[in-house]
Image 1: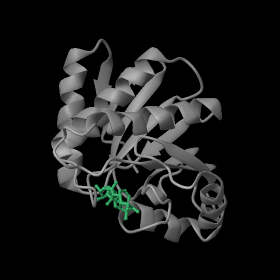
Image 2: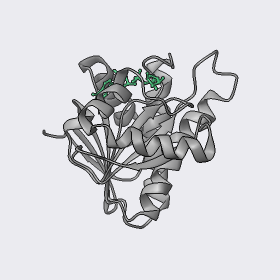
Image 3: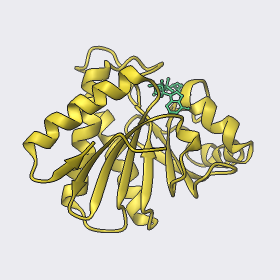
Length: 194
Ligand code: AR6
């Protein structure tokens, strides 16, 4: 799958792609999970279907140890049959009005997963548009947070994480992300293609 938009940040790349995240080979795939780590619909359902039952078995063990995973945090499993080594199950905020810590929690999902990636020597990582489906986060705001948080983290960190793919499931979502990435490109010292 061709990358539609790339921001080059030194040695690192932020890519925007439209597609099914379960089909894109990376070292780590981020899931948009729930606090119960119980599986569900949307991208969570797609990841468990494609990855197979092994992922839920690992989550059962994690749940037995920690109970819930609070919004803004993430837990790690293997990736089963997915084309990846790890799945990072990040719990996005359920959107209320944006005044209950949702922006901070959403940004924390991206940062936490990037930290988990760096700790594990992950070079390539893909994210879905966390919280913008069932959890109702307005897409424009979520796209701005996703693009800004990842770009700023990449800008500030040297290390193993080289390519971050933000994956949108629809043309409309992709166009919105692209608009925000282009705006950011104008504001940051780097080169972009696409
Ligand atoms: N590849 C990439 N993106 C996808 C895919 C896919 N295969 N399938 C859906 N999306 P959502 P949330 C997009 O609802 O809002 C679950 O039940 C989708 O179009 O999956 O964080 C969990 O268990 C949307 O843009 O996640 C939680 O209970 C984006 O992924 C709850 O939903 C996120 O939508 C989490 O809600």
